[in-house]
Image (spheres, rainbow, N blue to C red):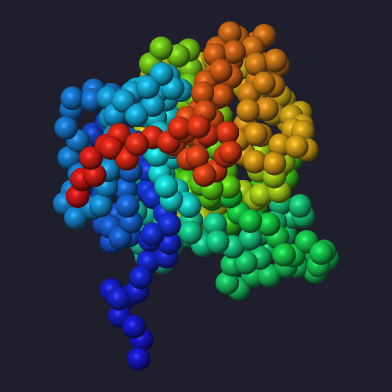
Amino acid sequence: MSVPATTVTPPLVDELDIVIPTIRNLDFLEQWRSFFQPYHLIIVQDGDPTKTIRVPDGFDYELYNRNDINRILGPKSSCISFKDSACRCFGFLVSKKKYIFTIDDDCFVAKDPSGQEINALAQHIHNLLTPATPFFFNTLYDPFREGADFVRGYPFSLREGVTTAISHGLWLNIPDYDAPTQLVKPLERNTRYVDAVMTIPKGTLFPMCGMNLGFHRELIGPAMYFGLMGDGQPIGRYDDMWAGWCAKVICDHLGLGVKTGLPYIWHSKASNPFVNLKKEYKGIYWQEEIIPFFQSVVLPKDCTTPQKCYVELSKLVKEKLAPVDPYFEKLAGEMVTWIDAWNELNPSTDGSATTQVKKTEAAPKKK
C-alpha cells in the first residue's frame, strides 16, 4: 500500500533555508504553503525598518530589517545594499544551513504543460543533489534525470560528474528582460515550458537571476555576494548578475557545477521599464568591459576555498575595473568586507575568523 503524501518527509527540511527579500506583506506564501511550510524562512526586510511586514500564520521564520543588519554587522553592514533586492545576501550570511533557496515575493507556483503544480523547491533540491557535468556537454542534457543518460561518445572518465553548487531556475509569464528589451517588447510573455536541465559548461558565463535560485551554501555561499546596489549607488538590477559572474568563475576554478533550466516559477509582475533603465543604464555600458574581465580571470592554484577565491577576485576587480569607474574600487573593498563578515558569522568555515556573533544578537525568531 502506498504511503499517504501527507506523511512523506520533505527532502533536506533540516538542511535548507528559504531566503526572501521583501518590502511588503508576504501573502504570496499562501500559494507556496504546501511546498514551503516544512522549511525555515529567513526574511530580509528592505526599506523602512519601522514598517511591519505581515507573514501568514503557520510558517517558521526569522525576520531581519535594516536596524537588525546594522546591529549585527556593525561597520561591516556597509557591504549590504539598501533599497535593493541585493539585501537578500544578508540572509545567506546569517543562515546556518547547508543549502539556500531564494525567491522573490512576486513569484508564484507555475504549472507544467499537464496542468500539475510545479514544486520548484523539490526540483532545485534534485538538481543540487545530483552531479553536474561541466567538462563535456551531454546532448541529452542532464544525464541524471529519469529517462536520460550519457549519450554515445561521452567519455566514461567524466561520467561521475562533479558536485552541483548552483541550481538556476527560470520563469513563465514575465521574462527577466533588461529595460531596453522591456521597452520594445512590452507585451511579450514567456509561455514556453522547456522540460530540460543542463550544466553550464566550464568557461562559459551566464546571466544569473536571483528570483528562483538554489545553491550549496557551504561550497559557494561566500561567493554569492550580490554587490553594492540601490540606495547611494550608481547602478541597480545587476546584483544577481554580479553574484553569478563571480560565482561561476569560482565554481569553474574549484571544479564545481552550475545547472540551469527547471524549475519554472510564475513571475507575476513586470517592473517599470523606465525606472529600470535609470538603474541599469551604466551597467549596460559597463558590462561590455565586465564580461571580458571575468572571461579572462585566472585564479591562483592556492585559492582552494571560496573565501580565498573571492578575496583574490576582489583584488583583480580593483586592479582591472576601477579604471572603468571609481565605483568598482568601492565595490572591491566591500567584497573584502563581505568575506570578513562571512568569516565572523561562520567561523567554522575559515580559520581566519576571530569573532563569532553572539546568539543574543540574532533577530527574534517568530512563528
